[in-house]
Image: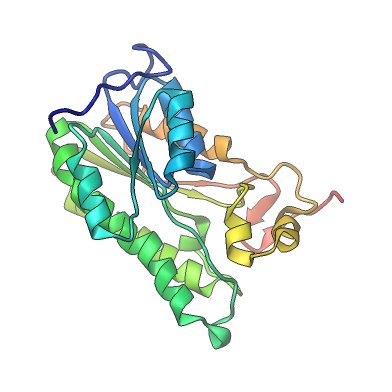
Length: 262
């Protein structure tokens, strides 16, 4: 839209992302913030969106990005966000989260609805809103940060695994639908990633959140996932990374984690 101020990249005009605009959702912390930082360093013009505007603006100021408020569960918010963008070459759908660890027998249906709304419908809302701009770019990328929880199930993860399976299915369908168009569809599925908020939001206890990673030698951190995202986005555009599963070496599978340290 006219009147939108130009961006200043922290990475300057050089780098593999030079001349491309990347939108990152859920960018106020964790993987989203790390991804925005990495893409800015790689020369992308970065636009960050999230609900917590104060944290978002602090990040944007630090990396030379543009911050816009975004609630992926609110259609009006998504529409306003899309209307404020002149160009989009890359969409990193990162907004998501887990909000309980209940068994199906103890399911909190409000939590299930929230989990589906944020992870599945939120991703669909933003993707749908920005697809016209991604098509118009001539070489667009839709990258979805999903989870290994979208590929397997586990006890206590019913609401989250159901939602992430929905995300995985949506990504697969979208790739089929866009095969004749100049838009790649990429899925990055992290396993155990130690961030400051994910397990805390889910378990509502710092002690329980810390226990998730206790004894695990070198769990992934947000920067590790951001590195994978940046690599996938900077391949030649005919190279499509359909699905990248990335786990720490200590996590051989969702249910198999080596805990060898106190």
